[in-house]
Length: 431
Image (cartoon, rainbow, N blue to C red; front, side, top):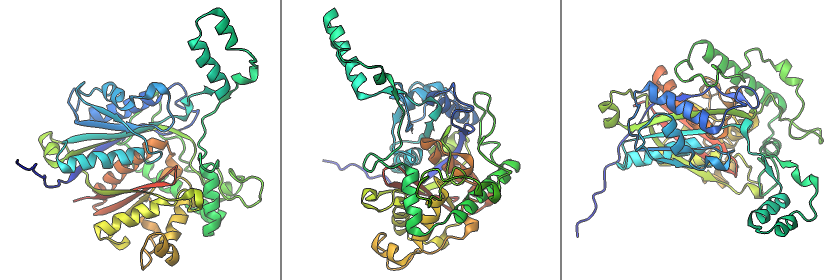
C-alpha cells in the first residue's frame, strides 16, 4: 500500500486586516450584535482585497460573551461579509486568545497544505450581553414547555415569586475561584511588588503611544466605520498621571491596598477584528500583498487555582515558543503584549527576569532577561484601544504585521493572556 505523502511546510502569509472602531461598552454599539460587528470587519476585509463572492478555504472566528443565536457565528459572518456561500465557517473560543488561536489553527492548515487561505476573526459586544433568568425560573419554564393540560401548566408556577424574574448578569468571574480577572490581577501585583505608580505610568504610555499612532494615520487603513462610529473612543490623548492618581481602586475597594483602577485596566469594550492569511502562492495568484509571515505559535496553561497567577500563563507560552524557535529576547525587534491590565504586563516582565521563576516554572537555567521598554507596544495596546475579548488577538496580529512592514523590522513577538489561566503567543516575521 502506498504511503501518504507528507507535504513540506509552507510559509504562512499575513495579507492584511480590518477591524471596527473599538467602543466602550454601552456607548456606540448599543443597538449592534456580535454578528453585525463581525460581519462589518470581515466585509471590510473582503472589499479591501477584492474577495467578493470568492471562496475562502475556511473562516475561523468566535466570541466570548454571546447569545445562543450565535452558535454558528463564523459561518453567518462569512455570508454577511459577501464571501462565496461555499466558504465554511468554524466557530471557536479560547477567551481573550480566541482570534489569535484561530490564526494559529488556520496557519497550521496553510503550512501543511490543507488549505490555501483563511480568515481569523473575533468579536465581542458587552452592550448586547445575553440576559438570562436564574435556575429556579428557568426550570419552571422547562416544566411549562412540557406541560400538556391547563392543570400541569398551572402547577409549573406553584410557589412562584416575582424575585425569580430578576435577571442574572453575565459573569466573568473564574468558576474555580469565584474571583474576577481584576481581583486575580491584584493578587499578582502584590506577589510581584508592582505598585500603583508603576501601573499608572505604563497605562499613560499606552495612551500616549496610541494617540501618536492615530495622529500619524497608522490606523487609517486598519479601521472601517461601523454604525456611524469612525474611531476608537477609549484612547485618551489628554490623560496624565495626575488624573490617573485620582482614580479609586476598582477591584479591591476595602483592604486599602488596591492598586488596579479604571485608568490602568482595560475597559469593557465592544468591537470586532479580522485577519486574512494565505499561502504565498495563493496571495501572489490573487495579486495580494504580503505584509509579514506568521511563523509559529504556542498555547499554555497554569494551575491558577493553586496560586500560579491567573494571567501569568503567557510567560510559559512565550518561553516554550522561543525554545522551539531557538531564539532569545535579543532576537526580537518588537513586543506586542496584550494589556489586560498594566499590572499583568509588568508582572510578566518581572517574571522573565526572575531566576527562581525561570528555573521552577519555565524550566530554564538562566533568566530570559529584560525587555527594553522602547520595544513594547510601540503604537499602544489594549489599555488605550480597549479589549473586545475575542477580537483582541486579530487586532494585535494585523497591527503587528503592518508595523513590521512599515518599519522594516524583522521579527515581532505577540503575547495574549486569557481567562482560565491560559496564554497564547505567536511569532511574526517580515521575511
